Image (cartoon, rainbow, N blue to C red; front, side, top):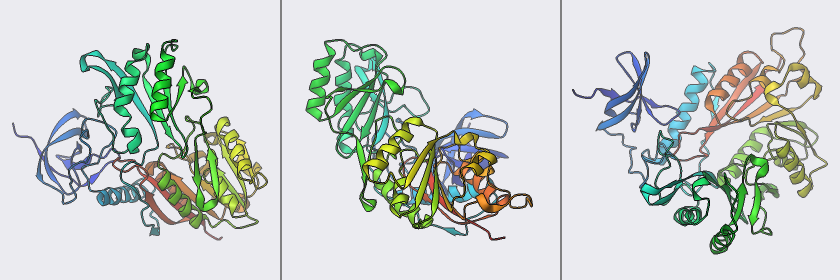
Length: 445
């Protein structure tokens, strides 16, 4: 029986080609927009199927040979077979499609895409570890595609070259430990002056492991930390006097220390450009009071404060709030910022009003978006509600185009805002992950 043929229309948020055949939506791994392919389904539902491309009958002019020998087996990247500019364009189309189909809105202007280095950009990563005797020892890498198995790799092109070159030495290092079968993960955190490898250990290290760890750390110039249970058990093992992890924003004369488990953007080059774009859109001014919701360790808060504005940061993690206070003091901005721990997913209109008036907002939520925060703004058609607590401008940084679209729909259709502009930030090249930024302005009544 011949495999069916499909014409690929677009990419989905997993990087799969999307087609419609026989009244069904078919998601086809390995296919690109504009291509004609044969496919074989491995999951069938009433309204859709998940499939793999079998033969490319008509290839896209943007199809390229993946640069990584492990692409297709390793699940770390999804679209290396799409030329880099095509990746950026596909993500921009994905953002526009989400805004219209989910939020029933469009940006009045699409911003130029933010993009940077295609390789070696990922400065934070969680590497899976597995001792597999049949494969000759320890595997260190990402999961295989659509699998819980660890991919058998010896390099990774999206990691900094120095970290990629450590994959094979890390395999030998873990194999030399007494608890080699009880180390399921190595978390990598690269700062400007230090590199930390956090070993997740399910059993205590033994005395004979100490010289192994010291030799590896000294040879490769890394710090070894351990984690025995939750994140509160992460602690340095060797050396104990190494330099702190940190990153800088030279444009704003800022330095941020951070712990290996704390959230920071994985792509420091793009983070700097993203900050510049956000400040251009927000236009903070001296004397303004500005809110930074989901502020984390103050990545956006402190650049806003450099403008002379007074900034209030709110974040759900007590550890990150403490780190934000530390960074503000380190950079001499403690008099212009205030931070508060709060669960923004439980925001109410009353709680929002209690914070007082803000001239502008910056929002940078996790993948779930900022639904409760947005819903807490005054409704545009409620005669009993005044706009006094509604900011004139909102800059929204998103890591999920679907939740940005949902929240944009609420802002435009229920809260009285215009979506002036939006665009993508290619924070994760060769993956289907879409980061984006948008600006909303309050419509005068």
